[in-house]
Length: 181
Ligand SMILES: [Zn+2]
Image (cartoon, rainbow, N blue to C red; front, side, top):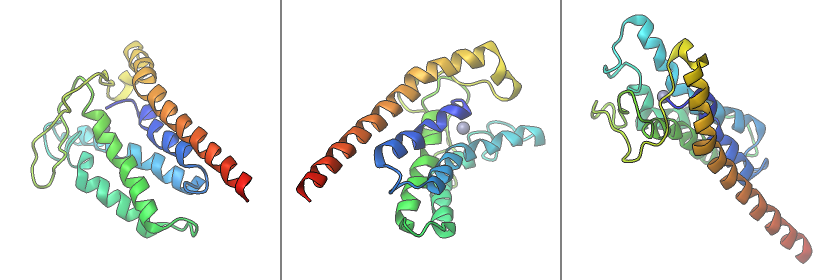
């Protein structure tokens, strides 16, 4: 995995770009949770389920089907009246899907079972610039810190740049609209 903190950069960037009206706080929280849910499969190690199993780490919880299910669940359960269920679905689906995509860009571990349950084959993306994060207590180690610093450059800065650009464009458009009215 990329570190748990860095997955959250995706909804933060989207929130900055889209703004609080389209992405209210409750949706932002749902998106943040959706980005990290896939790694609940780390618990599989405690039950002796091997990494390479479809039920193991980077297996079924990292699939496209699971991201669709997370999006669907949130759209169904959403209580925010100002946001359309489809928007909730797309936001949480993109957040959930960003997790296995970032994992597939790491340089270690096994690949991602994107197409579970249709295929248990594991995949990486063709580019793997993100160093794999240690699993469990190793996260607090020196290597964990080095990994996080690299992720600041490879994940946080691009996400904040895209979010900041979206924010600036939104403000410019608002200004233009206000001038016309
Ligand atoms: Zn993961």
